[in-house]
Length: 421
Image 1 (cartoon, rainbow, N blue to C red):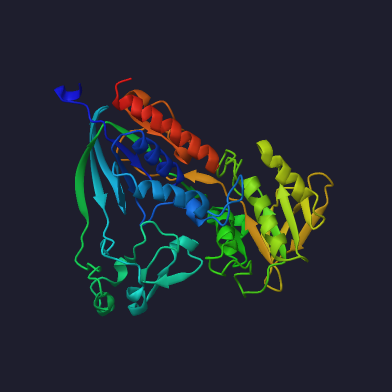
Image 2: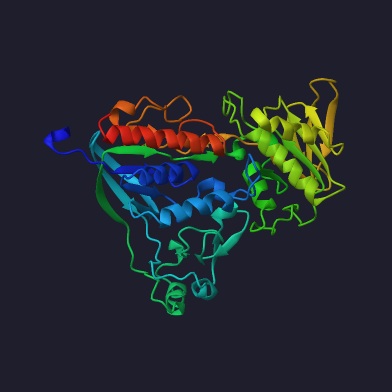
C-alpha cells in the first residue's frame, strides 16, 4: 500500500469533452467514485460546438444529452467546471491532486432566466463561436450548456455594470465576491482527457487568414450551426452575402514539417461534410476541394464517393501556394494542379482552411511529468504503471467514435489500477 496507507479507489478525470465525459460515466457506472474536472464553464468540449458529427451526422445533442443524463443520475460522479489541476503528488493508489477553480460569479441558484444578461451592457468575445461574434458580459455559454448556468465575465467585476447585473437577479445567484479557490482531492488513478485545439491558421502566412472571408474548419461548423453567428446560414463574414462559391483547402498546415508533421485524421471528412453543408443550402453553389489525397476511412468512403458524384463539387489534386485578396475583396486561391500542371488563380466567396488538431497540452507546462511525443500528445500506456492514463485526442488525433472507444479503454485501465490488478 502506498505510503503505508490504504489505496483510494476514487478516479480523477481531467477534461470534460466527449472523451472525458465518456471515461467518467463509464467509471462511475462501474461503481467507482469519479471526480470530473473541466477548465471551461460547461462540459461537451469541441463536440458541443459542431453542427453535426460522424458517423451518422448527428447534432451534438444526440450523444451529449444522453451522457448528461447519465451524469445527473449518478451520485458517484462529482463534476467541477472552471477547474484545473494545479499540482499532483504521490503515487498510484494515493495521489494528492490540488485543484484550482476560477470564479464563475454565478452560483447553483441560477435558473438560467437570462435577467442578468438583459442587465449587462458590455460585450465580450463569444468563445462558443470561436470569437466570430460577441455576447453580453453576463452570458450562457450556449443553448445546450451543461451545467445550464450563466457566467459573469471577469472584465466587469468591480464596475457599476456588475452591480446592475447582480441587482437584476431575483434568485440571489450572482456572487460578485467569489474568488479563485484551491482544494485537494485524493484519488487512486488519473485519466488525462485534455483534448485539442485547432492549429493556429495565423501561422499559415501564405494563406491570408486575416482576410475576413478566409476561415478555418471549426469556424465553418459554427457558420452552419443553427445556434451559430448566422443562425445556420453559410454567409460571407465580410458582408453577409450568401457564400455560393466555396473553396475547401485540405492539409492547411498539416503533413508539413514547418507546422504539423502528422495527419489529423478528421480533416478530409470534415471538409467533405462542409461541402455537403453548402450544397444542402444552395442548389446553385459550386464547391472546390483542394487536396493532397483524401483519407476517408472505413464505411465513410461512401460519403466521399457521394460528394465525388456531385457535378457541382470539384476535386483538385493540389496544395495551393497562396491566398491573396482580389480586386473586389474576394479571396483568390493560387497554385498549380498536381495532375495537369495548370497554374490557377480562382476567386471565391469563402475559403475554408482544414487546419489540424493540436493537443491542448502542447507548449504548456503540465502540473505533473507525463510522457509526451514530439508533438505534445500524451503517450498512451507509458504511464500505466503509475496509475495515469490518456484518453481521446490527448493521446493522438481521433474522431468522435474513436475518442469514445479510447475513453472506455482508459476507464477500464484506471479501474484495474485502483483495484491493484
